[in-house]
Figure 1 (cartoon, rainbow, N blue to C red):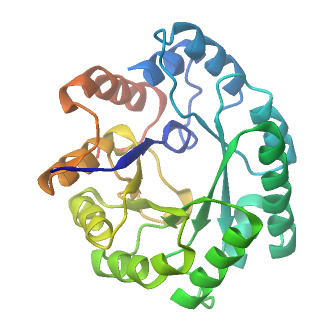
Figure 2 (cartoon, rainbow, N blue to C red):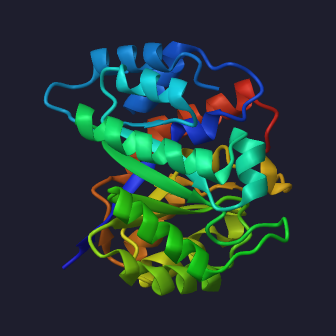
Amino acid sequence: MSETVKVVECPRDAWQGLEEIIPTDLKARYLLGQMADSEDVMREFMADLPAGAAPEIVGIVVNEQGVERSLATPGVTTIGYPYSISAYFRRANANMSRGESRALVESLRKATKASGHDLVVYISMAFGNPYEEPWGAEIVEDTLIWLKDVGVRTVSLADTVGTATPEQVGSLYRDVRDCVAGVELGVHLHGRPEGAAQKILAAYDAGCRRFDGALTGLGGCPFAGDDLVGNIATETILSALAARGADCGVREDALAPAIAMSHEIRAKYSHARVM
């Protein structure tokens, strides 16, 4: 029997680093098949959604203003927040101290509980950092335990700069998975295209059943310092998991129009490389 896994498409992560603004209607069509216009995109997306469809839509936030926008946007079911365990990255990416970031997570938990939204927290730099800051599985474990105590029930471990090897991905996941029983623990991995499938399979073999990706591998993290490092392509995730007999509930041929649109977006709105 095949085992069910969850694959999460991350268009905001794919689009946020593009040099040109993508038209709102193109973003909405992409979802059916940078986010200053998130509300408009969701409005068009929800209007064209097939009857009976109820997708999980994650609104990523980095501050209180983003929280208010996401909670007020029809269609958003889940609020996502990137919590960095690297002090340098946290300051560079969100201009927050550890205490301020933790306070925002606690505020998010209260707000989403009151509004009926779900909450997912991404642990940025979960697999290490390039800044010579302290890191270890025990730091990730302490963060996971704190998040569980706060009431967060979905967490993704992020390889933010894409430097983790498949062995490191599998090792960390095995080391921390048992400390948060009852929490859905996923991965949000970046990397070079040639090593992407191996990272996904390492996480899967360690017990992971939730994977983030972006069609064609568009986007990633500007802090990686390597133009070839980006999001792992959703189609790579699907093919790798299919090789393990996992059921993602997605027909790869049905993604063809969206993949073509992703290539169009890359060609028209960035000077980025084709991965």
